Image 1 (cartoon, rainbow, N blue to C red):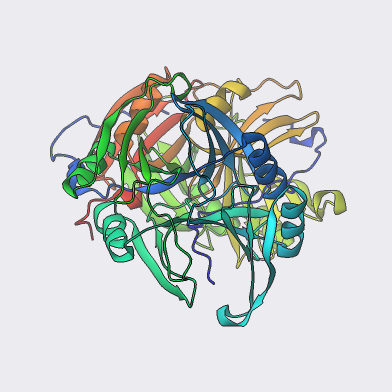
Image 2: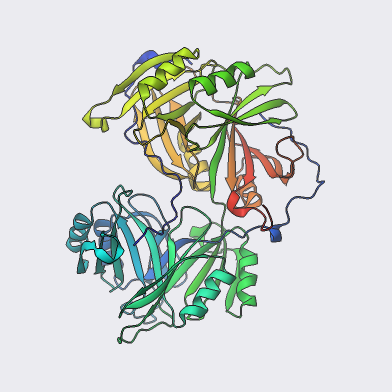
Length: 571
């Protein structure tokens, strides 16, 4: 069985740090035209970017369910939400990939049968046998031990049941670190009608139709938005009667335009019980929430999506031509385009491997004095041969601080080195045998308050925290991952050397499902909005929807429309 989870770019940075000596110690806003002509892409011409944000199941005993899902399935509790009739515990996969799983413990005294859910939860795992053992020890029940299945090319597959009799599918996966929630199956009484509703009305994409003889037929549906688990529509063909109606199951659907999704459900003849509106639930903090149901009564919770990723990382440079030469000759990047802004020229670069976010070099033309040599962040590059990469940097005029060296078993034998570019930006070099040549893996920005910056970028803007790393005597950092692109690293230095965190010539280009909602979220969080999303007339950005804001330290955020939200008639 092939993996059906959408896989955004995932960068494992946990083993890539060096406990550094003092050798590392050294170390703009846009006035984009506010014109409204031509008009920006109308909302109803864009893809609505619907995806499965979370899959929720009712449980009879919350404590027992948490034991199975946390200890047995490796998930981590990230929050609890108190609703009128239930407690919801939101869980994230061990690999921090795919949609969340929500356990719903009902408190209204209404009897619900949690034992008859005709769907399934699919987990992709590194070690199926060990995963099955862990699952059993936590209270789960293995019904078909994981074993290679000739019918699906020898992939290891097994099945089990959780404490509420939910079907758990275990599939071996080489790209799993531990495990992740790959797909959620719901039972449907009419498979073809359900397929039409979820594809034609809600905007999911049909990925595959599978028939498991004597068991069930299923449609596997995915979203064009990366980072979510697949949705599987299941209809059983075995003789055992199944209850398809009003199961204690919920699909949390996130959309760029929640009201448009609600309208589509109504037009399809299904029930919308609550139009999207700010939630009164204390734990949801006025989040936009609506409710509907499909033909079988499965609850659909409609949420606002601002799913985003770092599409470009920009740094100011003193000599644009010299910097371009350094980044192409020394770091193997390729020039993609040049853009003219009111106060600067931008050169857009792409990694040799074509992976990760773009790097943008900004040469300012407004004669305002800027200090390019005090950027407290870093650029991380993964290289096939770290030593050759280091020599290329040296040959191009860069300075090597720490030659690439094997960090030993404690750090997974990662090869790591450090350098500085022509403007004193810190360059981290990481060996990666899977790279063809090299790619831009992460961009670090300096922040004056690490906890507050983490709250803003992760808790407010939705970037995922991959890791917190304290580098003793140097810096502490949070490594965040969006839904594509390179990682974003928040860095605060602890070595006693003064750092300039404010108004550095640095820019984050962030692509999101909904620029309007993203900018509104920034405004609600109390940060500075410079320009709401509007059509750009800047050379190289003509006709694109662009907004601008700044974080608490003055780092410029350029907010763009993500590829999965482009107008439906776009080429």
